[in-house]
Length: 344
Image (cartoon, rainbow, N blue to C red; front, side, top):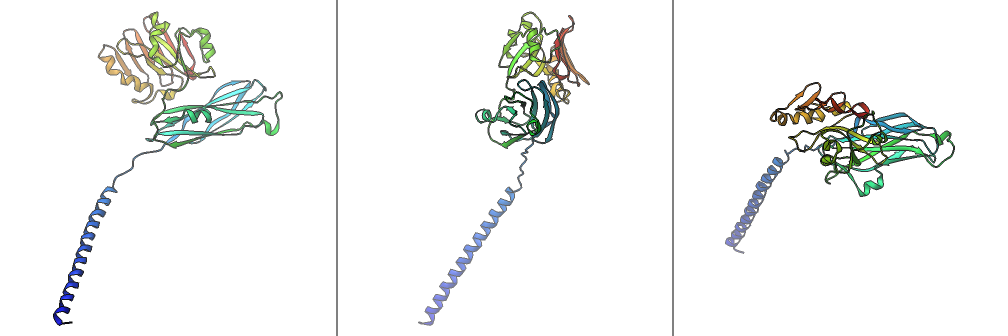
């Protein structure tokens, strides 16, 4: 091979090496740019939060027949513990409410309720049941809450058991998971009933019923025009939610003002419903302040929040008491502590 040919081959090889080096350099520059872009994107933050728990003071004794409660408490974020004495087989029963709230930003689904503590003699059931959750799931959006009822009773036995059969320490664990499903309706399941002349002080559904329901509906206060109270010129009334056990689940005092389409209904019975200046019953009335002032009414948001127009008033007290009434006739409906209600 001649010297010129050998020189040509070396030159060709050098060109190839230079070309490969150029390709590698270009790839390195591209990778560096790509890496820089990834680094920029990695500065984004995830701000979603998970915070589902039983409310403080959210475990409470509800109703009892031939039974007494000895324990009802929240023992961890999603665990409640109960204990009770059942005295009469075939009759004894006691129920508890567990209120769960979602204070995070993620939707939460109630997957199941784990119960321990029942025996062959003692039955423990929940509402909702695990079977009903499978077909009608409960999904809490941010700031939603739901109530689970736990009922303890004797099975079909004729004598009071002893020893292990009498064990009544009940533990309910609530299993929630993150979900993309839409939240359930925040209105608790139940039947809404209305009354305006329950002159006796009532705390049970039977008491309210014996004093006369004005109307029974299933979809909330939008049907207030059918109420006897409204038809008879009385714009204040009581609203109740009655559960499947014919028990009062929640109680509201309501007032209808002429310039607001729906009645103003404030939930009573618990001081936690009063809230701060932007939440709870106080927040509801504060939100209506401009509507009242533009219609020559007024609202006062102090230790006790109240709004009035002409002779119609509605008050919310930090104690949990609600008054809705006609100031001229000195007639009113009230929800007091523990959902004790009456009108006069």
